[in-house]
Image (tube, rainbow, N blue to C red):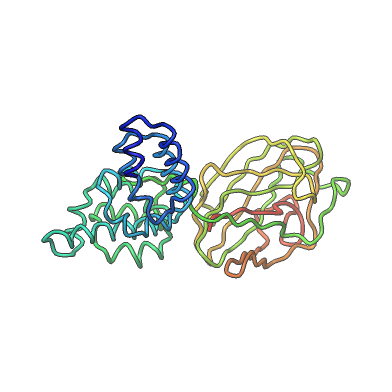
Length: 334
């Protein structure tokens, strides 16, 4: 960084270019918070953009590094406002908590929840997106820290516990990079072509229930279609009879995994799901006859740790159930 500073100060563009190339090749997330403050001070927008890209792509390593604990308060705010961090909100909270503890060590305050809140301030606390956490994460990690006011706790317990759906204090917007995408390729062992005739008449509902074994966010649902066709759907994600997410849209079909023609209905915001709770995917579909699945699997292990279990739904009036019908694939953020 010192060489780059000299190159800029004494107008040596060739040396400056070489310094930038070196940083872009060698900059690691563990030291990005050493470089970023200096880059901002120099006003180098190109390098600053690159530093933020490193932070976005390697968020866990960046915010768990020792240099993160030394960043100024203003930079902490800049980090927390980013929508593109690739890390769970729980890890963001834990990093902020460690940052506050470090500031307490440097001063004379006692390491308590009140002291941390005094250091962080309401503005930083409100930048943490607590509604994105699972109830278990919130109860086991956040509550013992005692940094939240009673009114904040009340609102968050209602939101995370799904007693209420709106929040006035904290953002529910998902960070685009948060979570690892896990896609159920196909819950059916056999796929029938559109000549097999899965009809859509009188807006009859296709639906199926499912449970998962660990907290996750449902981000999209894949549906069967037919070659060159357009389908209009009204899709709902339900917990019992409570609507958690809904969308109405039209889709043009494309080939999916070289297996069938279909489309992906991406939810406006990923829906937070808890383990061992029954959820329902429900859709009214308008369009021509389509592909459909047969010999459905009731239990699907999506990886070593994540499992999804399907059940037939009494809301389904168009034939979809565990064994056959619609909804071949679900996409989660875990």
